[in-house]
Length: 164
Image (tube, rainbow, N blue to C red):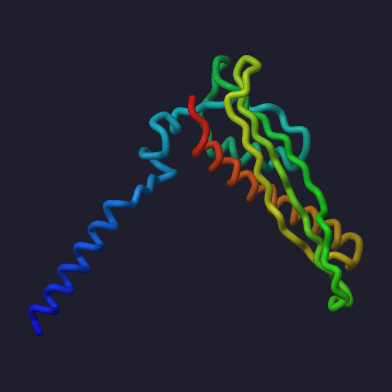
């Protein structure tokens, strides 16, 4: 009986150590970030053309805070928002959900050559069909929240795919 328990414990510990050796997690933050020089990456940020682009660029500036020089690449973001088709149900008497998508393309260029490009989007919704000022505030808040989420997705894409 005791030998059977000992064998089971040994087998479980052997299996656990084998599986632990197969994992390949790499931290995104700190000194051991993906890529040897990602902590040293610096970008010249292009001017935003809209409020959504400003939100995304502000988040990326926090993620890549190094002071850029004239020889560093330019990071540009093009963002847009759209309203997706809503529900067809008549179950909601008032305040139907309105679907919103924020899509952004990040481009990193150096001397006219594209070094990296990625597209990401975030879908969200808000309740529409109320008073006009409430509708406008809800729509703006939904777009801004989706822009912050899209910025995080772009940051992760840059960390995963951009190499100097």
